Image (tube, rainbow, N blue to C red; front, side, top):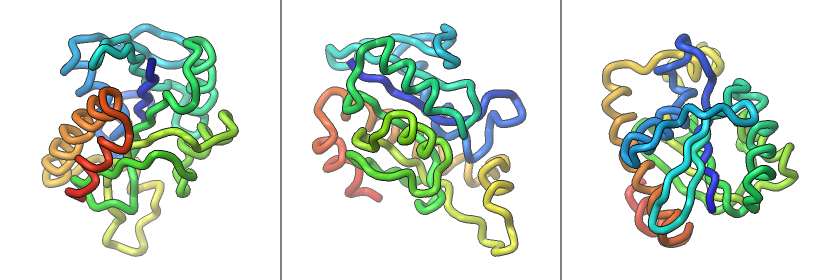
Length: 189
């Protein structure tokens, strides 16, 4: 069994912001798999699906980004899923818009949601899919304003392509493992 967590912030004001790439991915994946992600459980909206013969739980923590780890730890415990069965999808400033990158493990890289998860689990030994949002071109732009800003029309197109790839990457990761998914998807980024 896998827990697929998309990181974001709840509420309409954050719906199409750069920081909500994880939520957007879960919505796309839920649509593709034909499952609603609306059951409240441990401060997350969840849904259950079957991918390549494997049960997966889709989750969108509703705790706000900086506290995502509380919900993720509770869900892993409840479903008795190991840390290695966790897949986290989130936005990344260091990747260009439209690009994705899969990693088998790692640190938080300054991402507050990932920092919360790693702190609450005591481990960063889980796969993650990063979706590029790029950095602001204007060096005077605050990073928090950038990540919480809405996507431009061009960024929407790039995000749609990245989210499509990321949804396929989740399915590949669940069905064939992290190495196979990395070999398939990381070569294009």
